[in-house]
Image 1 (tube, one colour):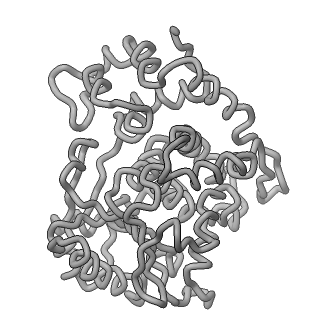
Image 2: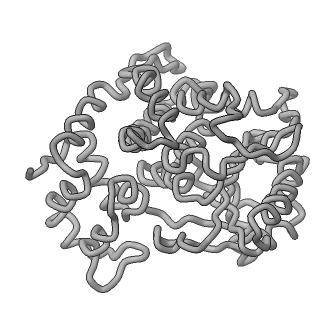
Length: 346
């Protein structure tokens, strides 16, 4: 996976406002975490928010001030210093010259979901504010955004409700199964969210973000299956299973500048994942099919060692760890296995 890129909390709080990735890199503010093992012992805080302008996320620093306040409160609640908290925020953690909607490939989008899954805590930043176009923005409008839903769903399908916070007009509060807001479950309805690419009608054949999200959402379906029987996550598992045809639609109507076009999304992929889970352990299956593909790779993944990629696979104890933490070749192979396009030697 691509490195998880953060800024230490104390350094973030000293900034005048949010910085683009390239500027933060120039100022040597970024901390790179190259593997799942690098997350151990670090309090990674994933910040999720709705942009308040099209070309920059927070022109009036409304969200920035809210994040600094969250860092102050959360460090106290967790018994940490702000320097112990590593902040993931899309604007400084993702290269802005190669944006999600235009240039990010399959693995980069997989990584975006993975970052949410491997964070220690997640905070939704949604104070009352106004978009540059005059639209009122708050928690309800945040929950309508497709990418915001994807980030939140990824976190909950790995961590449940542990350390999930919302910062809105009423302040900072912890989400739990006892105080769920009705909108919270909308996070799993990612494909029904609003996407900027759809507003622009996908000119010149630009893929819809819904199409790009099929692979990571397929991973999330596998994670939801793994939640069966887990007392703390039973509500999540039940909701996903009862609504899976809505959460994972077989196809969609894509609006284009030349008119609507029907495109396939999940098709029969869920049935394939169900069969995979019944017939074989996912990690063992990937080990079996990965030998030729990975053993001869000259690329040692971030966090790997001199034993190479095949040894790196052995770090992972279950499917969700592999899907989150594998290098690009491993994640591509994992996608192929889940989709059924790579033959498993069972």
